[in-house]
Image (cartoon, rainbow, N blue to C red):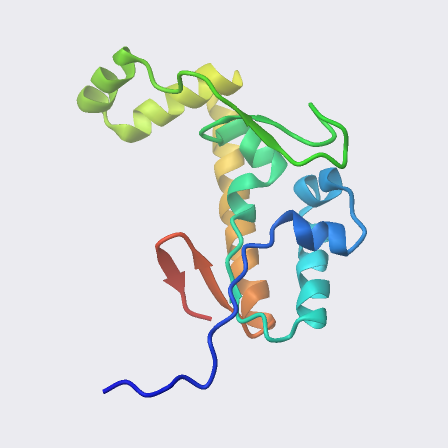
Length: 160
């Protein structure tokens, strides 16, 4: 039988709030990973009971989103004023032909073609963005561990 918990874990999805709280423009937060981590550290110092790092920064980091994002973004400081929130444009993301490509060649082949079509990038830019995304993800996991947090993204948990 489960007992009464000593407390409920604190796991806010804070994203750009951390940057704003640290005095950064949303452009600085979205495009400078070191400044973003500084903002997360600053916020954790203010709220030490923040247990779970629920950040999806490694998905929405500006250079990643503009190269291998699944949506067409309008980013602060690039397409919008620096203090704006990023926005996603609505459009037909997948065409009828894409379903055939997924079935015939697989999802990864489709994704590469999708990124080229939507973001107007080449294979080298896609590979570079994927490496950056992995580096940012690993950095986020390590920084969360240093803060004593568990890293959570979507449906999976990476134990700190």
